[in-house]
Amino acid sequence: MVDRIFVHIGLPKTATSYLQTILWSNRDALREQGIVLPGAERRDHLWASRTVRNDRHAAHAPEEHRTAWPRLLAELADTPGTGLISHEFFAAASRKQARAMVEALPSPEVHLVVTAREPLGLFAASWQESLKNGETTPLADYAREVSRSSNAIWNWRTLDLRLVLQRWSAAVPPERIHVLVLDPGAPRDDVWNRFAGILGLDPASCDLSGSFPNSSMGVVEAETLRRINGRLEGFTKALDKGVYLRTFLADERLVPRGGDRFWPEPDQIEECRQRARDAVVHLADGSFDVVGDLAHLLVPEELEERRVPASVTDAEVAEVAVDLVAVLMGDVRRLRRRQRRRDDASPVRSALRRLRPRAED
Image (cartoon, rainbow, N blue to C red; front, side, top):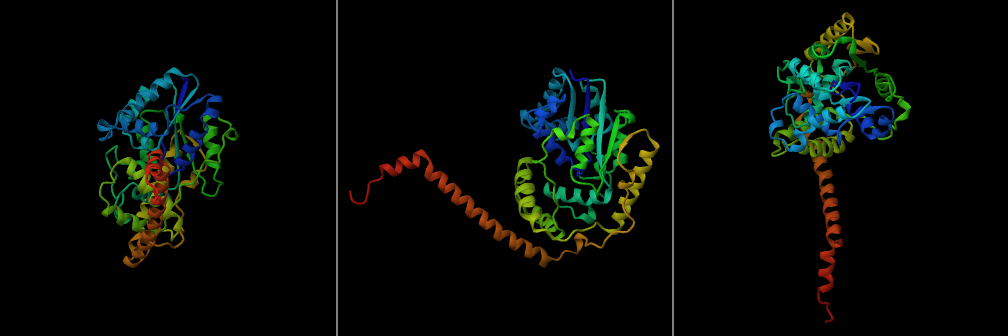
């Protein structure tokens, strides 16, 4: 049985994909240093979070998904060392769900790791991520209220550091809650080095070459994706969203276009400022282990001028959409040619060609 367990709960859009890519591509190096990353694949931690949060879709999910949480618990119970669970969707758990999760873990010593960043950039990035997951809400209407549902990921429920800490402090004492504040001016590997330090890992022992930043779309590209989502039919499963919307359409075709960066509406910016101040006060008044500079959680008073998504015109969307159709036409042609070559190379097709009578016969 592991002697202690670290649970990394996000927040979402705080270098979580970057960190998880490093962890899963270096499992052997982690194990050599006594870190147990349970599960067969990275998605096991996602599926476990759905069970913990009583996700409304979990009961009807495939058995592989439904059994992820008990499989993680069994592996942690059967393996010595330090356990590590990491997924940002755990941040949405209620107080009751957080307590139940911690009580189920096979170790009396549970630590929480919370990665955090200033709320304005976080808010804009999370709206983009919601679009990559098929949402259609305009940024001006995004997260206007704090959801009471533990299924609400793209909401202040998971984005507000103070609210997340208040819920999870009911399950883990503040002195065992490590808040890692992202430094916006630091090299990319800074967050990994400090994350590894919390775990007691040698950061140089892991290969970072497979890691990557989660890039953003420009404002017109984001608005185009939002409108496309409103026309799509049948792309509701997690696989469809992950493979076709997030990876194929957004990350591989819209992100490379670049485009103008953007802010939310002015009143949303002020809300981000206030939530940042509240989080800093909450951390300063508690006994949390803060790794980093609390000042990096504050939204600057002076911001560069940027557009808002509501300023995007139909003509701009049409231009991106036409370019996108042209790119997709090339994709379709390449896929068909590839399929044709595979068909031609198949044993059955080769046998049929040999049996076909020649013209001179």
